Structure formats: structure tokens, C-alpha cells
Length: 93
Image 1 (cartoon, helix red, strand yellow):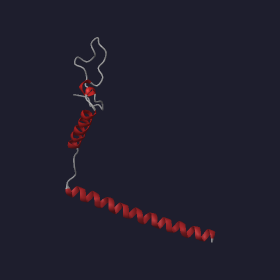
Image 2: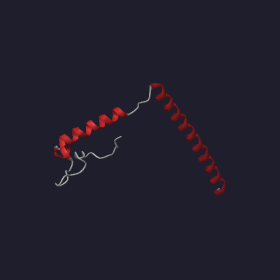
Image 3: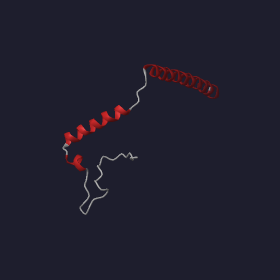
Image 4: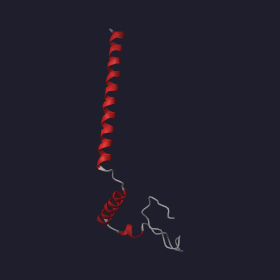
């Protein structure tokens, strides 16, 4: 089983550096700015391919649930605001 990490460094063959100074970045460290930018976009595309996208039915269900929740919260805040307004008018005149 392999361990997933957030690093972009390539591990050395054999597990550790053998007598020399440690490598920094491997081949990826020697690329210019455009090579690093291309690598960044390739990694983005690779990550987006791993995403489980919702179906059209799931998306419409989630959207309607969010809209209903927002409308309920707007109504709740409106009622609370109206109640506080009336309370302040009663207390202060």
C-alpha cells in the first residue's frame, strides 16, 4: 500500500541519498517557469478527473434544498428583525 502525501518531490531510488547531498525537486526543480506552470495545470486536470460529479437530478435536488433553506432563513431573520424593531420602539418610544 502506498502512502499519499502532498509533496511534489520524487523519492530517491533505494530509500535515502547514498553519500551525496540530497536532491532538491528532482526533474521538476530544473524546469523553467513555463514548465512549472504546465505541470501545475496538468496536476489540476488530474485532480478534477478524480472528482465524483453529481448527476443532473442530484444537482437539481441539492439546488432546491439550498434555495428552500435560504428562503426559510430569510423569513426567520425578517421575523426576528421585525420583533426587535417593535421591542425597541416600545422601550424607547
